[in-house]
Image (tube, rainbow, N blue to C red; front, side, top):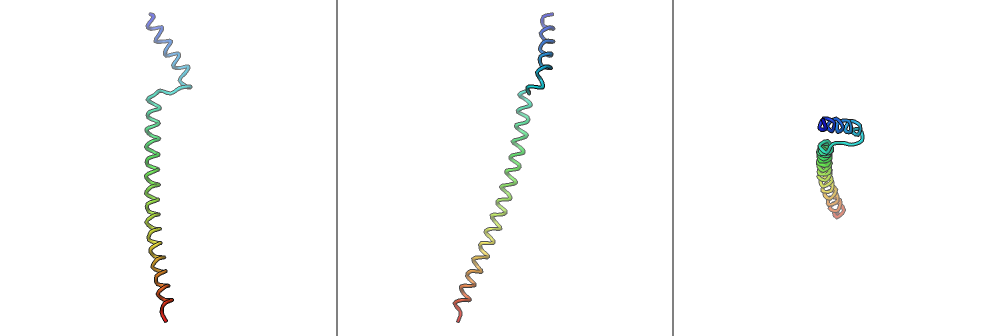
Length: 77
């Protein structure tokens, strides 16, 4: 009887407090999902930055070639 009463008391307490706390497993699951989402986002951002870097390097090379051509044109008689 004491065990049944204790079990019922724990259930009643859990039911009363459940809106105010979460289980550790739920927190771990939520943190894992958040970590996955942030990792995916950071990977996508890093990929975008790499693409921008490549385009910037190509643009810099083009500007350098244009500069060289202008210098060459100025040096012609």
